[in-house]
Length: 207
Image 1 (cartoon, rainbow, N blue to C red):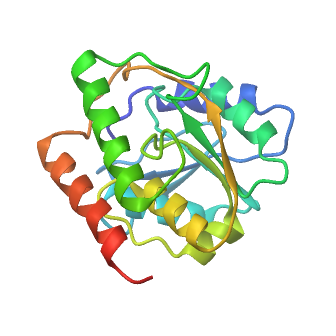
Image 2 (cartoon, helix red, strand yellow):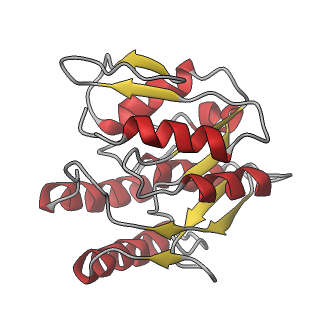
């Protein structure tokens, strides 16, 4: 696992979600799975981060699931706000680009993020400001119905696109995105190419 701060993150998530019953599911693909307090850890049986999310959601016992980064880029306090805002919505998307949202990443990565968000909105007809954020709270029944087939780690984009086509409703909640505090980023040129291909595939494929 390339997330050395996963245990502190687990503890912070528990603190932030103390107003609701919840569990934390971690899907690990390292040679030696970590021993985490207060979390259910599963060995990944597939390949890729997107497929790890599929396994984690399948193992989740609740009716609502949250998908977030394991490096503190997505803040636990923002997750708590998103859970509270779910209400009658089918999903809540964490957004860096709505009012009060912030992206504290380096300028180059902010520019790349804004570029791909623009491409996604244009090609997929999405009204959301930040469909590429990777931070979402969604009802598990909708996740299952959408039947995501992820390429790379942009699974949330597919969930949003399919959810809108299926007639479900969602909203955005402001988040503050911060650069990872430790570990190695999975982003790069190869992942950027795969993301662009993924956007085009979503638009052209009949679901």
